Length: 125
Image (cartoon, rainbow, N blue to C red):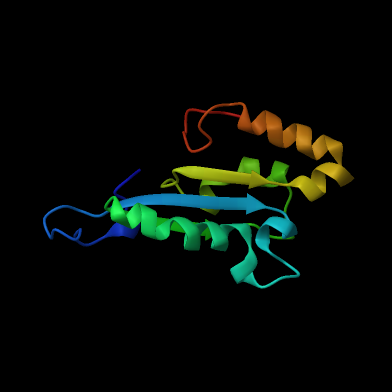
């Protein structure tokens, strides 16, 4: 949980910066919600479901969908910070369609995830 620039301003008490919990989804077209309404994507449903619960604890829950059809897990793993930023509390990694088409891509994605915090500049691939 962080107090990132996305949560600029004051909290409900007017004294403290708001607390922001940021969920980011990356993945293939299924994770992006292609072929369906964005409102029915996993990321959108999650945000709608938990927003009020987080708010009751004084936390702003934000879910961002950075999934798409044009990249693979391997490409994304190499430029993670540029795509999702630094202020991420949970990173949902969903490349299941690519894993069934290209098992090597799934192995590369899993290897990228095994290096600890993907947001940390000290972690190399």
